[in-house]
Length: 193
Image (cartoon, rainbow, N blue to C red):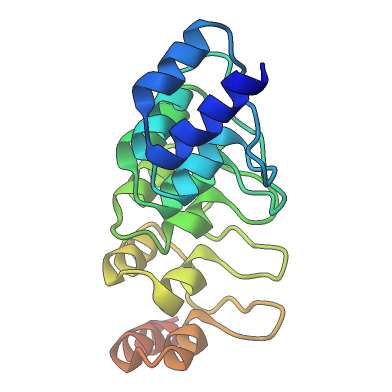
């Protein structure tokens, strides 16, 4: 199977969907990790090999909750990369929307657009999920996510005045990033509460 493994790793690097599909049809394990220990689908998402990621997501043998060494799942990485179709497919297959620690919604908060976040929220993602250091998705979006993600989280009821373990709110996250207009908007919301 060494040849198949090499073919798999090369197909991920080159985004060769058909090679991966052929390997899977021959019984190759879709949960195989690359040379750095990343599950294949996560490795594909990290290097933007979206065709391969889609082929792996279609496999009924894919372990949806497999993680890399950072505890990231395929749903988290697809959310981060703004791959809405893949997020939808993983959700339909039963990928966990909520988990302890960092969640897919944290990752979606910094995606290129709000589409993955909409999908996650529609599936019951916890709006004010807390990371291990108390950071919320709103804090992530205020730090370096698109303003549409901030707006969507606010519309979904995200609490503006929550603090992480360092005592920072979404307002401080925005200010530290130099997003003064956003910080002012969030600050006004805090004052209204």
